[in-house]
Image (cartoon, rainbow, N blue to C red; front, side, top):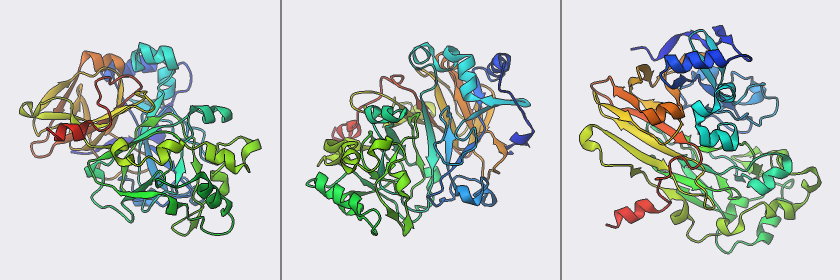
Length: 427
């Protein structure tokens, strides 16, 4: 069975205005599901890990000056904050027949039907997104500002969660470890001394942090203001709909990190203010002596459904500063099995293994994707469809169908808190 559509997205009509009818047609045809095209994002300061199934000939499809493609974004209405970016970089496109339009425009046209009345009334958009990020080695130590600091540059704060899908991690690449936070006992003077070294060689800020081994099938929850240098596992990353960050490491694998990336989201009057840069950090969270216990995630079954031929598990969960901002689940359907998924709200889904159908729509995980190819692995489950029930069937007789999906704020209210998996293991 082919895993690609027969046309590429360049041949489609792009609709930018008056799309209400097109959205209604797509919702009717998909029985509440919207098929999404792959959304590729490059990063000039990183080295692609080559596990996104993107054709290796297309790794630099944006141009060598833009860097390699190391991210694929899912269900995104958030623009990527890259220099020299394309106008629609980071935005997911809905594809229906010979037409395409952004998910952002679809939500604007039919908000409550797609994201639900509660999210639409509060945010007037789909306020979260997820991605695969996939690198050969580590990412420089950085943090994402919280809401109070992000608002100073007209941005939004960004917490994020990580899950390492086994299907995307047959190889661990060069550095399967992530530095999180700061060692207990590190002082603000230590961090300031590292920042003062920025133009004089390696600032060795990693000496102040702690590295943890990354394991496929596990994850982490990281709030804003926490320093982290993600390792080389391909990562599924639900997060708030913002691309705000500050890099605190000036040299990574021998590559210079431009100081502009340290102050990208810092007000002009504070760009040389080292105390301000330190103030951005959530200090207590960074030096927490129980950091792993308070941030590491292990999958938890939503219910005992093995006997029915399927299993749904929370893989990203927990509250950030008391708020449930996003969650993610991993659904596994055994060969030949069929089930009805009843969710508490909208979600964005990506198939990472197998083939089957969702509300009659063919879904499958591709083996190789061209930069302009349309795939059958990504779809958006609207709030209406989620509440009515989505019928999923594994049409393979030999391989499980595995689907990752993430939810928006305060949607998956039954989700556990960080540490729940350890408590369950204790019984």
